[in-house]
Image (cartoon, rainbow, N blue to C red):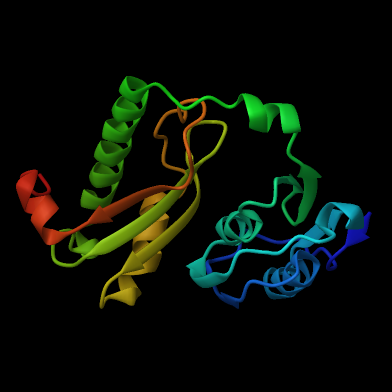
Length: 198
């Protein structure tokens, strides 16, 4: 196994600003590990010949890793608060994944948007509807928002509050086969169209 960086116990880290180009995956994982101070274990044969996706912008550590590993057929699993193990995604699982039923996907999307809007509206300081907000959301096995990326146009100081409002929010289980991350854009027009915050 390969250890990319020493583990350091501690509480969950805030989002990081990443500027990782596409590069050999082993090299990208080294840089990711140094920046996040997370330990990443993997067989060197798993990453041989693979290249990472570029990761540019503000991400949580799990969201950045998911972006970095996209299209590599590798899966990441936290085995402790500071330790990640990479494994090969089973070929059978990749071949047999079916797209979700449209009705199930539409229902999940409606629930996701409603719960996100409710959580954001509950924080008046976010001034929902006064600016444009972009969200990239991953849902964990328990049906809660896990990795999350938030961008607020022209108001980056609001991003931490939006992140705090949404991290861990229960939204229900993702339909089987649905692609992640879910992307949601909140604009003043869409907020007004739905009647604004109560």
